[in-house]
Length: 185
Image 1 (cartoon, rainbow, N blue to C red):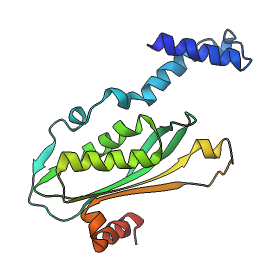
Image 2: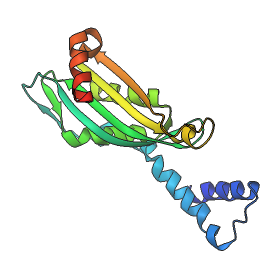
Image 3: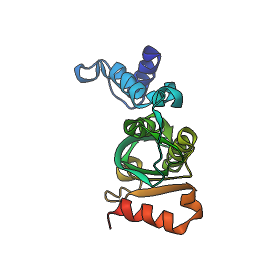
């Protein structure tokens, strides 16, 4: 698979007018292929594998919030990165998820090509599925290189997307508590 992807990168270099045999580019197709496979490794991961049974019984029923989980993803429209952070909260109903699993869930979905809105929903639905929580809230804030490096070239723009499930959708005070905690006010 790596060799096939590398051949495509070689063809791209040729189409751009470059010489893939010059010293600086000689190994670039293979390096780019390996990088693309790494950046999209979420396709070969599963939620079950990521969680690995790290769901534990607990009497905790108050909001649990994990903030500032860094993420790196690829825009499916231009194959350029978007970089940001994710905030996840949930209201446990007898079960809690191991802390590191939140970052692993974010990484698994971020390491696929998509739009930010879909990424946000995928993370929320995965946390809901694993924990059976009374509610899940996810906010993703990211800067998109497809908007910064090309097109309108707006360097300071960022995008925020959110998905609220269960109590976070149905109860305005629960939603507000989450947003207040995320924004640090």
